[in-house]
Image (cartoon, rainbow, N blue to C red; front, side):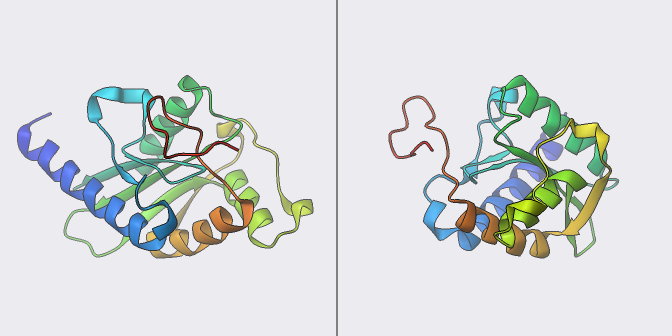
Length: 166
């Protein structure tokens, strides 16, 4: 990957982290762009409780592939029961930013969102349900309700005493 491509990705990840900090001020200290050399240890943007956020800013974004990468990383980190993988993608020279998420995860979030757990699907194998695309702004609204109502907190990262576990 060339320097220009790395810099473009870095700028986009910082933009997403900034939007997440503004939307989730109670988690602003934890939300940040991760160190890229950590691969599956951390998502591209880390610190949002309950979510593994992978980002892509490209001329031809591949949201499904990015989501599959997030799903793989969540499995490698052994967090499939607690973390929802999402892909945040943007097509260069376009205005909209999109979030790709599995339908069963969206269903699970809405179960928390309406505080009625009868509508909450258990976490299933990632590829059993289709991927759906949301506008980033819509995802932020849904995720905000989910994080606030589900009382999600991050598991402590080694050496980071600021985070609380469930």
